[in-house]
Length: 349
Image (cartoon, rainbow, N blue to C red; front, side):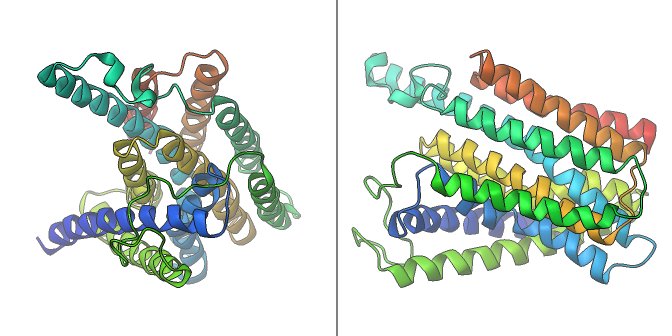
């Protein structure tokens, strides 16, 4: 019973911390003149992607020789799978819910569609999303992801050293995002900083403090959440790889999913999607670099299934973006790839 209570408690703490983190990171972008999109792809993604990176690092440094490498590799593969499927699916579902909620409010008040917020006037909230930039991020991810999956199929003496290249790749992506053209983040219309309510412009120290504290809380609560799921694995008769692929990523990716819910509710779909794509880039490089450096990085059937369905989900999203067919309903369908993985895992695990 205590494990269930801790699971629910951690979920509530993570959600509340994410609300404060989102509030802080938006003001962080304003204070330090970061591009509006980079607030999601770099600043928010760095904070929310911290748990899975640490899970991978802790597993290889402090885990047992038997299960540590399995958990590390599973976490490095499971993170992108969950974000590329469930996080996008939840974003699409939230857009649909928000559109329906506003439609009911209009009907009740007798206001026509002209009163609908611009971001919801077409495709359930995706009309103002920068699909070109999002497609570039997904293309980067797909190429890097294909390389890391390919390395899991071969064995050679120099393979561990290639982990350093993954860190360097993220460095290039970071540099590109921070230098990208676009307006800087604006404080217009932002909610007051949580720890300085009522102030039109918060102090810089308060922004930094709230950002750091919320990241620490998200990290700690996510780690406790993961430990409860690791208890659930053996209790359900699941192997370490299955726990790392199926259960742990749902916990470590909870911040990305909750951030998406919070930003969509606030009408900031671009930031929600930017956070997801930025988190995927971190997961394709940092945890993978750690895994390649410190484990044999060899894939079995379950890992290959995870890799294949992650790639399929991203290819599906790229097709929607490039064909101009991205809608809330089709974005929601991305979650179906995770359902296929869960079903397939029963056969291969």
